[in-house]
Amino acid sequence: LADDNSVTIGMILPMTGPSASTGKQEKAGAELYLQQHGDTVAGKTIVLAVKDDTGAADVTKRLAQDLVANDHAAALMGFGLTPLALAAAPIATEAKVPEIVTAAATASITEKSPFIVRTSFTLPQASAPMAQWALNNGVKKVVTIVTDYGPGVDAEKWFGETFEKGGGTIVERIRAPLKNPDFAPFLQRVADDKPDAVFVFVPSGFGSVFMKQFVERGLDKAGVKLIGTGDVTDDDQLADIGDAALGAVTAHHYSAAHDSPENKAFVAAFEKANAGMRPNFMAVAAYDGMDLVYRALEKTKGDASGPALLAAMKGMSWTSPRGPVSIDPETRDIVQNIYVRKVEKTDGALYNVEFATIPDVKDPYKAGK
Ligand code: DHB
Image (cartoon, rainbow, N blue to C red; front, top):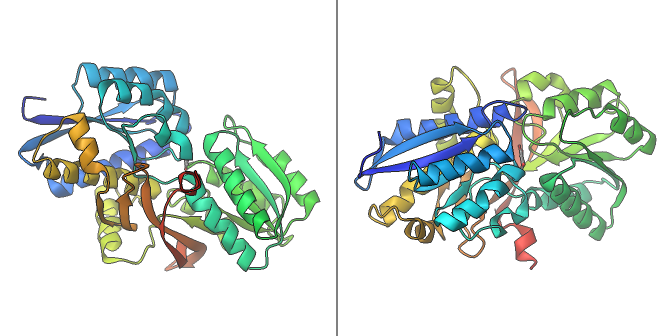
């Protein structure tokens, strides 16, 4: 239990409900880091307290309050969906405790508290490079389909604006509800529009439903290319999606197939610790969230006060399993490579195989301000 020497990291995740796969991956990523590095850093004992917010923002908020007031958490971490990250922001500000966002990816989140630091990504960071790739590869007419909330709106805007600026045409912009996703009626409209490609954003865990309905509608056979951010071809779901995913081209910051010694070691250790489960982009962001806490504590020589940790995190750079990363000291967002990938079968299993790298991408939403 917590004592004077302990530093509690309060990890708030959807462990149940429609985004439970995010919770499962994130918890496993954070626990792997602890298992590999031990629970002691700069003379402190790290206590990881994982709480289930069920994906409900009022629960996130109550858990954040409890962790700060009763457990004296030195940092809050996790936040599986944008509304959940937003719910904790006023508590982080009030308590002067870092809120490390390891999942939610709406660009504006980091502006909601000066104590928010992010190790996941932003939708503009992945969507703008996807548009550039489409422009360079003969795609002229696109229908966008996004889940109708923060990250989807970001994806629609940054894909669409970049694509149109380069001379492409957005034929139709479709937003599907977050609750009870059924894409079939929207995909019928896509069939009628006959675009060169569909650009899609759905949150982690929803890709399987989308991809299966895309193929059921015969859109792949009709020659409609599937492009998107990498959330739709999530490594957690690729096996379940099956061959329907083959050929999908996406832009993202992490693939389990990323070819580096750090990633090979990460994937092997993760699969060993989790009965063969493959890590996805959520797992790596939680692993990196823990790495960031450890590095910050080393830098402060064990000073776990919120402002000291926050200052230490700003500008931190390291090698993640995803490649080189740093925390932008101005925006507190992660700066990272974005990779263009294609779903292929290698050794009998489906992977997002990276074939192009856009290095050191900052969140373009903040860069343009
Ligand atoms: C968000 C959630 C996801 O599962 C994802 O893949 C991207 C963004 C979000 O709610 O911000």
